[in-house]
Length: 214
Image 1 (tube, rainbow, N blue to C red):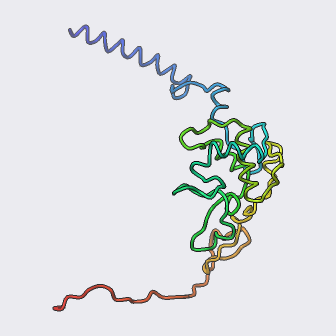
Image 2 (image 1 turned 90 degrees about the horizontal axis):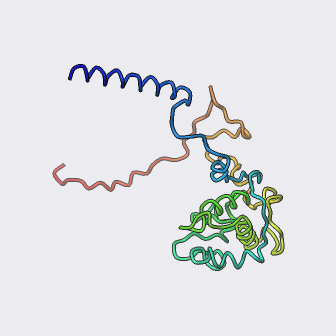
Image 3 (image 1 turned 90 degrees about the vertical axis):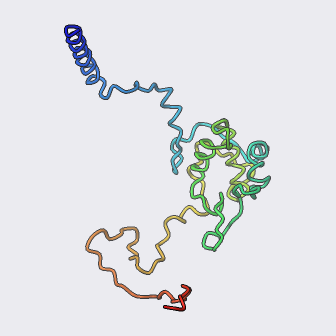
């Protein structure tokens, strides 16, 4: 039995050394190198400037029908939202209110990232079932309903990064807080001198019940 045990240990050591050599050749020895086709299946992001948008096109005229079939059940026939599903149209000038409504026209800064989200995540439950052209057509319809493009405008990979969205500069507004220095996009990172000014105090509303014996 002792001899057999030594044999097993020796054999295991040989296997370990062989595997170590293979592991060093293949770095962590995990998985395999992805093929170009596999990478392409995941590499579907579209940048704000339109880079990465797949070749295709569409108009709101065609998009209305596709939107009705694929999107209206949740988002309403005209993007007004159904039940508790979010609205996609409207909400202009509401972001600074107590009840902001974030939609295509009121909030979203880039048309290209609308395409990215719709193609990547919609319709709900069957994500990435839309073709490139169908996605362009739906996005064109949303832009048309938000008065951003005309009904016959041909939205495509060539121009989706150039669409001027109403809230394109909405994420670059100066911070309105009184204790923030406005440095025109170049915030102080060290040895910052910030004046302290008390602009309000908490009011003592005395709501804690007291024991009569206290």
